[in-house]
Image 1: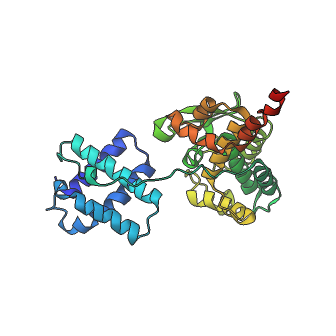
Image 2 (image 1 turned 135 degrees about the vertical axis):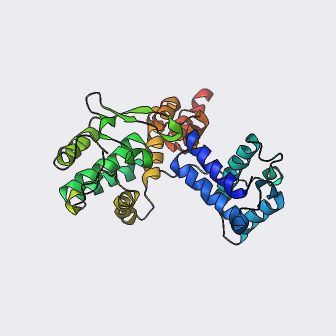
Image 3 (image 1 turned 90 degrees about the vertical axis):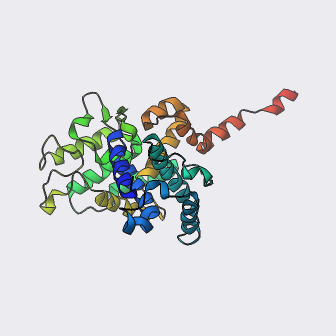
Length: 308
């Protein structure tokens, strides 16, 4: 099978299998860079013509010329592994050329989260900052607090619909999260719930009671059925990053939620369910970040009392 046809079938099958749009986009980016030299010959060159030496050169060029980080090289290797494993399953190739390519090593660092003090400062800041309209004010505050109190992913928040917000039972329902999984997250009642109610009240003056939960500013005159864009979400975080002089984004707030919750409860199994992880090993990365629990544990070692 030609490279072009294999490339198209793989992306199609990935979509049918349930891979997210972001994952498929990553596959395309990786494969396009590898196959780019063959595009002019895409109707003649077949997938079995790709050799281990060419893949090795692909990684060497990426690392030495394009300055790939270890994480980038590891991700590209993972994407190519998915493609060539698919090709073997489809009996398009017999031997996997990636087997003779060394897998890039990656040292996993603990997730970068914010301290409890920094979270309090953020909550103060988003209340006092000047907003262009009241709609933007209530929406942005609700978005930041939703991230902090639920730990949901960026796309999960953008994909929330009005029906996913169950104020009667105080739950947010995540439908079709990462990996196609659904889950429920309790709504924190003292702070988050009131923020969501405030936002819904002003939202109801402009938008339908159905549709996407978080919407664009109606003062722009674009009352469309589209969800809030990633660009608008980025602009919500930009002032926070500037004010605190560090990169603050949705995933950092997710890490913060996980770290603080684990420090306060010590229950990694509940955290796994709230974060929507398929494997407890993924959740375990937060065990190394809970400094307070380590300090508390060492403080209980009162060895001197044993000598009395």
